[in-house]
Amino acid sequence: MSKILAHDRLILALDVPSAAEAERLMDQVQNQITFVKVGLELYTAAGPSMVQRLIERGKRVFLDLKFLDIEETVRRATERVAAMGVEFLTVHANRKALAAAVKGRGNSSLKLLAVTVLTNFDTHDLREMGIQHSVQDLVTARALLASETGCDGVVASGEEPGVLRPKVGPRFLIVTPGVRPAGKDTDDHARATTPSQTIAAGADYLVVGRPIRAASDPAAAASAILAEMQAAFDRRS
Image (tube, rainbow, N blue to C red; front, side, top):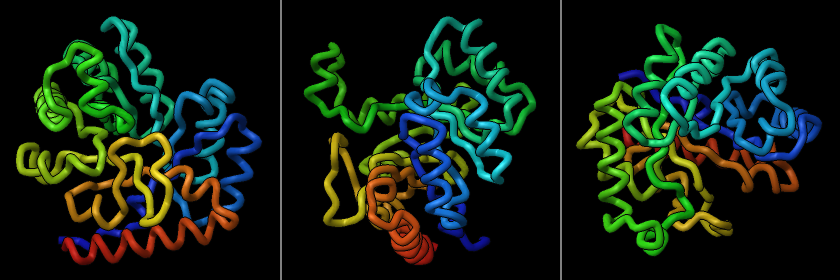
C-alpha cells in the first residue's frame, strides 16, 4: 500500500468574495496548498475564468456547486464542468440528479461527490424538513445511493466516515468539510471534527477554510494542519 501524502489530501476552501482575494490567498499559502475548493460565493463572483486561472497555476480544483435540477440541466452542466478540467464536483444526493451527472461526465476524469447532509444540519433541522431519519441514517442511505448510481464518493462530516467506510468499501471517496484544529471555533458547523479525528474515522480528503484563511500566517496554519494530517495518515496505515 503506497504512502498517503497529506499534501495531496488537504483542500483549501477558497470561500472569498473576489478573484483578487482568491489570488492573494493563493500567494500567501504558496506551495503548501495544491488542491482548492471553489464554492458558490467565488464562482458567482469570478466564474469559470477563476477555475481556469487556478488550473493554470497548477492547482487541482474541487468545484462545490451542489447541482440539483432536472436531469437535462444537470447532465449538460456536468458536461461543461468536465470540459473545464475540474477534478471534483458536488451533486445533491437525489437519484435523478446523480444519474444525470454520471451521464454528463462521460469518460472524463471528473469525480462526482454526492452531498449527503450539510455539516451545519443536525437532527432538529431534519425534523423541520419533515425527515424522520437520524443524521447518521440519512447520510448512510445517501452514500449507498451515490455508490449505486455510479458516483465516486460523498461529502460527509467527520462524524460519519467510521460508519460509512464498512458499507461503501475502501475505494469510495469520503471528503469531509468543517474540519477544525483542536481549540478552534467550529463556526457554523454542527458536526465539526479535528483533522486527526476525521482521518482516524476513515476520511480521504479534508476541506479546511477559515482556520487557514483567517490565520495571521495562512502558510504556517496550513503547514501545521498538514503535519497533523500526515501523522494521522501514517498511524492509520
